[in-house]
Length: 284
Image 1 (cartoon, rainbow, N blue to C red):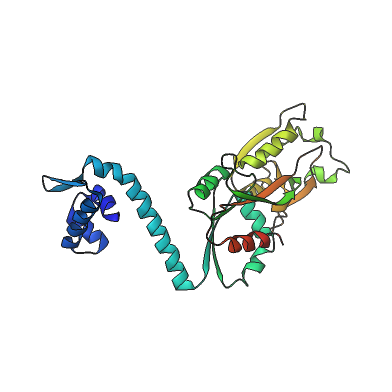
Image 2: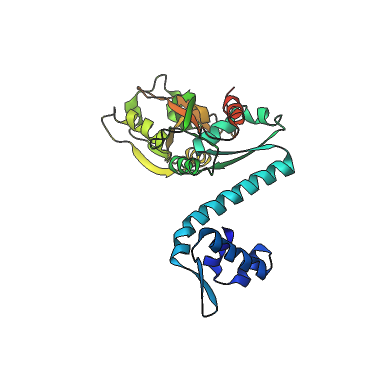
């Protein structure tokens, strides 16, 4: 199947042979073998180049998928062979990644010599798509999938929303903060959808609109902006405190719904015990 994919790209047997580090007669042999097995003509030569026939073009999407799955399996087996450890690919939103870093998970993971975990970040929609496409094994984010009921899901933690202010801010001198005390301040929002939805519910109870000065997709950048006096922020307690101690944290006035962190994974993952170990270790 790789030969069909590469022939569509390069249009030359020699180029395909070089890409696969094989001899040209070997490529030609496999081309004839594919046509014999499928009982249709898949390739045709025109002006010294090789093109896919209509049957070949029909087969191309399936060849792409098979080639991709083969490469993925080859990679996983290679990781297992080289490291003798089970690999787990984890996707996290920025809030989830920060919460993971603030927890004691890293101290727990350093003793897990039989697991190779790779972590990447992304927005909630992208991570759910990557989980569906089997590009990730587990994702941590602030909302379960709204489009796929087949995922296994588990709520890991619920966290109250907090008001983040610069050190020395006048609100720190107040004995009690009311919602109307905040109308004159600018705010820095996080772009994470689930967090914005929770904050929007809180803001809906106010009789005025808060001034949002900027939106960032990074907790670190938001803390830096608050410290620099750009505005205040509303963040889940689970991503706090700031390790650099640049900001102060206050209770958010009024009624607000807690932000929840979820783990999602596919039920057909080849090693469910490994997923279970990871999920159980996140906030143990």
